[in-house]
Image (cartoon, rainbow, N blue to C red; front, side, top):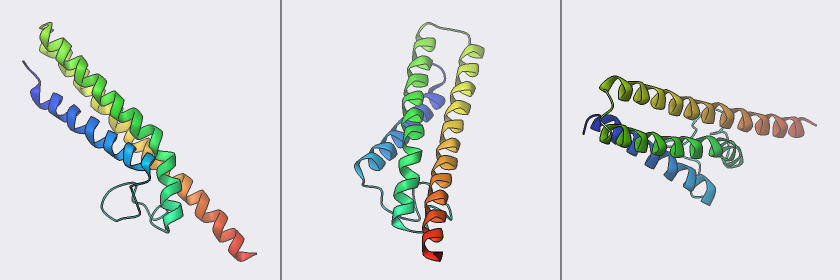
Length: 126
């Protein structure tokens, strides 16, 4: 079977994004400086952290499912003995798509946390 390294990569991504999405959904992921959407806005306070991660959740969940789907696709393409070029294209397409979802998760999480922080700052100034 070819492309074992990308398959392992997809498995790692699916697991990591899935566990992170589950931790967000279950409320296990508290403010920390190690994992999560760690930006100036999300790290400002616990509520901004939660708001930001709630916004990032659907994108991380989608990334987990997409990584799983691309893992299955590579396995099927390998079993059916498709040319290496086809597997290479599927590999790059999958990783770029997942990376895009993770980046969007971070952007959305930061944006939502910033909006929350700005609204709290506005209330304090009144």
